[in-house]
Amino acid sequence: MLNNPLDILKNVSSIAIVGISSKEEKDSYKVMKFLIEKGYKVFPVNPYEEGKYILGRKCFKNLTDIDDEVDMVDVFRKDEFVYDVTKEAIKINAKVLWTQLDIICEDSFNLAKNAGLKVVMDKCPKIELEN
Image 1 (cartoon, rainbow, N blue to C red):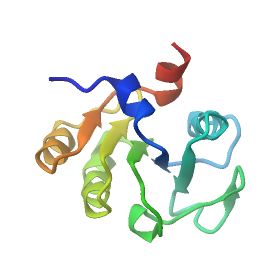
Image 2: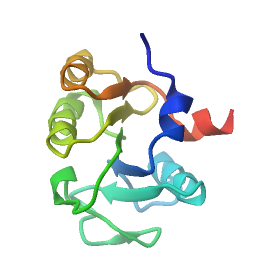
Image 3: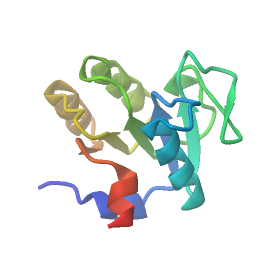
Image 4: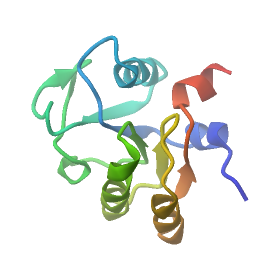
C-alpha cells in the first residue's frame, strides 16, 4: 500500500531538510520557508552551510547532529546521495523518508521500508499541501 503524502504531512511536526540552500531562489529554501509558515519545526541540514542560520534556524552538518526529534527527513540531494541519507534517517529514528521531485532511489526505498519508515519519493511537500 502506498503512503498518502497528505496524511503523512498531517501527522508530522518536525522536518529535517537535507540539502538545504541559503539562497532564496533555490527550491529547498522556498520549501523550508513554506513549511515554517505552515507551523512545522524545520531543521536545515547541509555540511556546506553548517553553523549558518537559514530562515532563523541553525544549519546542521548532518542528521545525527540534530539534538531533537525529527519526524520526517525531506531530501534535496541527487539520487546517489539518498542511500547514505536514508541510513542516517534510520539511525535518528525518523518516521518518514521523503525525496523531492525527480529523486528516486529504489535501494533507499527498500532500506527505509524494511526499517519501518514511511516513504514518499518524487514529490514536494509544498506542492502536496497547496493542492
